[in-house]
Length: 205
Image (cartoon, rainbow, N blue to C red; front, side, top):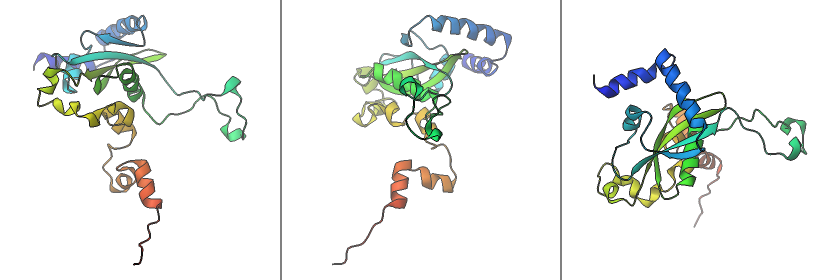
């Protein structure tokens, strides 16, 4: 086994004494840093490389912090002027997963970079931290790389905002292969609903 295989085996045992200690120290360190900040190298090099990271010019890593759990409804003083069924403030379950929110925050902060992928690095009782792999589409090292220059195409601007990254495809339900669910989810839920509900009448000429 190579070094990355050993690292992968170590990260799979997160309840081991070594990993519990390392994750506790890292969570303390990350709490002292801003919510979105750049890192010099990935915390999990084996995971980053499996998701497309290369230690070359034009590729960088940003770490993002997101609050765990559900979300709160925005209502002034907690007052909802409506029916009691809509009066809930806490325990609002969002459709998107937390990893996609971390990608979005990095993508908004670094508007000129393209989000390639992301992975989990740490968590405590309040936050979760994710590292996001970003690519500079205007760097010549990227534009000349046949394995990466697909992301330089303008159609890939802000993939993370449109649910096109791995985390985005997961919350859109595109990982499933069943025929019944696929017909309701592809190409998107809105397009599927429109296809099933739009009345098309052929014109007689």
